[in-house]
Length: 132
Image 1 (cartoon, rainbow, N blue to C red):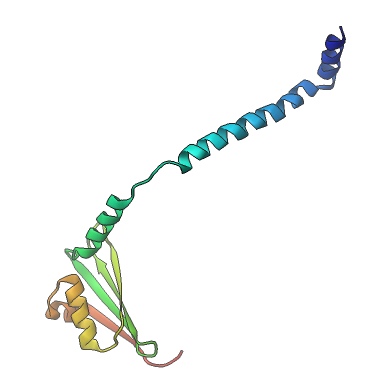
Image 2 (cartoon, rainbow, N blue to C red; image 1 turned 90 degrees about the vertical axis):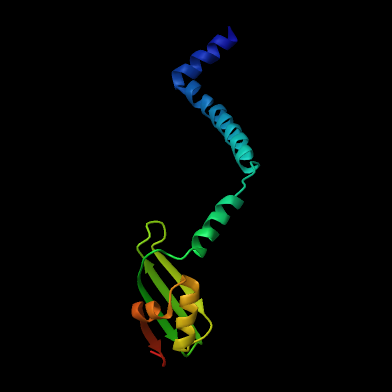
């Protein structure tokens, strides 16, 4: 009889709904902890993906559209941006630790597998000599 009276009071106040919320919260917390533990303890082998990226970067692009070389004589390095027509690899960026035009051209031709004449035909230079 005492329990029935408590349930009637709880129903009248609308508390039976609110008393279930902490239980539901506890259940969701325990379930999310279980799922998080399973996901974090899962082993991921990314070696094959890294190897694929390295192999893709080593291949010379089939069609080189343009080459932009920024030679920063103050800092002593050159940044080369190569735009390609390859659908998988649209842009390549290289940094070289020298600023001489002939060395930059030779390094570009070695990296891309192009002849020196093709590199000279495609390359645009931007030389930075003083502070802006």
